Image (cartoon, helix red, strand yellow):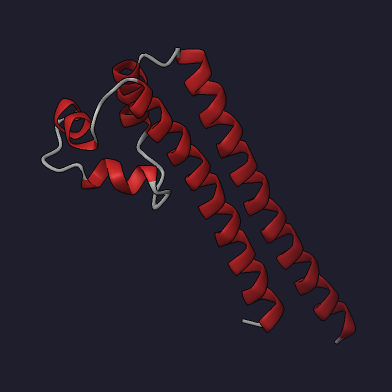
Length: 115
């Protein structure tokens, strides 16, 4: 993979990480407002450790959709608010991914045309 492609891929990962962190911050603030600990939420959602919740809140991974719904109900976050947040972040993520692959394809075609 060319250096430019590696840089673009790293930029894509950075965008994904930032979006995950934004969602994590939203969920953490919602949990704190609802007066739950990570361990309490984990137990309510059927997990044995608060580490799962911690990983989501730190932006290490996207929570599964069914977990997001359970968290929204647990934190008393309106469904439409959670939906808009999740949809908006996923849309930004998808746009960044598509742009990465469109750029990659364009570079590939330019290289082929020069040969």
